[in-house]
Amino acid sequence: MTVKNIVEKLNAKIYHIEDENREVASGYCGDFLSFVMGKAPADSVWFTVMANLNVCAVAVLCDVSVVVICEGVTPDDALVAKAKAQGVNLIGTDLTVYDAVVTTK
Image 1 (cartoon, helix red, strand yellow):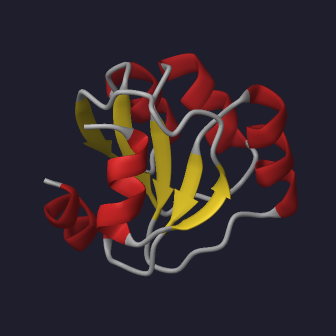
Image 2 (image 1 turned 45 degrees about the horizontal axis):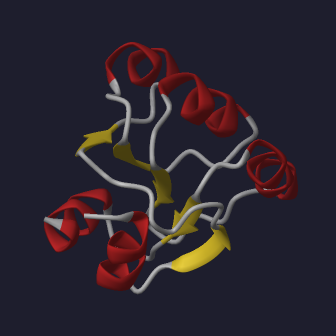
Image 3 (image 1 turned 60 degrees about the vertical axis):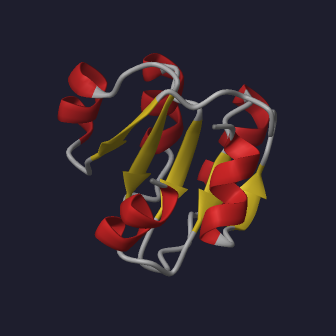
């Protein structure tokens, strides 16, 4: 599966796509950033409701394929700018975290 497939399955809003063909190997759900840093696998989809600048730093550190901001939460401008600067795939959905995971399975 690729980032493009995730976008299509979620009918996601695109905030920034650096590489739509990046492979997705697994997924991780979490909002407690220190847990995400220690547990999110590389090349995963990270489902979260967090939408601040720190999300980009964690996404880069964990080398996730794409961040999905769920439940209609809108990322702040600083996060979108940082995602563009650091090449982080960042999308959003109105679905709950649970429904987003189930939809992308």
